[in-house]
Image (cartoon, rainbow, N blue to C red; front, top):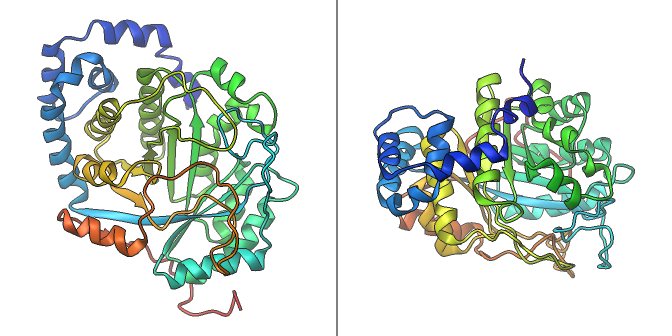
Length: 379
């Protein structure tokens, strides 16, 4: 099987840039008249010449979204269980060089936080940690999953890159989805952005979704952090990554997250900011290219932006979000989070907003047949 790095190498950055420079308005409309798009069509929709035609692309994207997803929008919430990290990612609030107080929850504390979310109506939860294997080990993550599994329809992870057998262990514990942000698909830029720590290994991280799929994970999400690299470069590579995963693992649900870089603890100059028009263009191009792919929009975006992206292709959103570790269950102090959120709506407010625009908020769409309906695991 051709690896993802080999597949991405088919389209080096210079070739992509040359391609978009030669796209015409006629090329854009030719793509809109096609039923199934190839990778060149996707790059065409990401090109500057597609910008004036966003209204026409939006109509196609809306039609595709309704055909493949109906009016359903899935809701989830993140649960940060540790912000201790050994990496020095230049753009991240968890950077080991930042001096804010760190928090690592015990399994019992993590369970209390999870139960607070459960009691608030959440049924899809995403566990997040920093990259500190000696503290937030795969065994620790598995213990948290086992403790909270009876209370949630779906548990996902967004943690550091793991080995195949470690993903398999987490699947056995009750994890059914994983998200892995490559951050940028430019290896040289990636190396500069991640100077110290395990995350410095570009290929190990790039191949993590492959290892997860091979381990039996049901759902996998990928993404780049928009603003780190030129717009067409990372958006195109992210789409290719998802396309490659769909082709090689047809039984796995593949999704894409679309985060734009936000303010955080520390300082970082964003050299390639993505404005709203380009951001919308990315969502439209993804939906047209990958009709079956879920698209997740986080609370990095405003309520206005998130609500308006739903008809254009976004099928999964978070609600009731905190990017800090702890403090929810007991109403205590919450320390600095990984990044600043923009949309602070609760689960109930998010459900109401989705229904106001004529869509259905789905809080639970998956039932693990091995999970019990009642348990004292968190007692």
